[in-house]
Length: 352
Image (cartoon, rainbow, N blue to C red):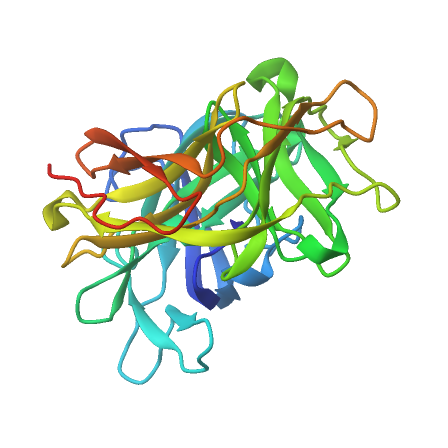
């Protein structure tokens, strides 16, 4: 198991009881054909400690050779004073319980086909995007709306590089068509590792997006397009001697409301002239529908990977221009424009 960066939390804990695997994508939790990967004891994991390629081993089990379609992640229950699943809001120390509807019974369903060859070991990495998975309610409590993907490492590689030390702590994403595939946080030396990523020969190249939207001052966004990934190899896009260096920027906010019953996920997208990409995201409050997105005001810097470093970056035209995307739980999507080049914007509202 690994993690993508989180928003506004110092810790996001989940306690895993077991992982289940089935050859059918439509199998229910009571159908036959399940193989359980049971842990010796429930394993409490801080998802936010699993960055830059760090993994937590959930165990293994023998599987018959063949293709498998579905994984279930089963969590332990919060019971009384025993908090199995919780969050620690940034700047605080207390664990707040995290409600996990269905996770402790049938488990969270992940559809990811993978093949097991006879007499071989297959490693499957579950990437738990804590930022997109934790939702706040109007009374201040939190629920889990899981965003989890699975990647077989046998066909995967990685992208690595450095940002300038002033940007240490920035969020780095690997994206395709504006969708985040993998994310991490640059460490204190500015190093980042995006892993695992499915090889480009079967899945296409990636856009690497660097975002430092820490308030009140961060850095402009940076985008490096067309980065290839080769199985069992690392593509380096910047070195410690020549890191990705972005100009400082004020960080403003985009805020508004969305119909609460839509249970919407909110994304801030930016277009650098070569395509749109996700800068940040959040879940609207489940009860009030309110949301806030923090975004840099400066123009983004963009470039294309051509097999050598450093990658030349140039400034895109529109400073502070974003598109806000609201994705409802039912699958409906709405968009609205916002510009924060001269200050924060509120009243960017959506009705479903």
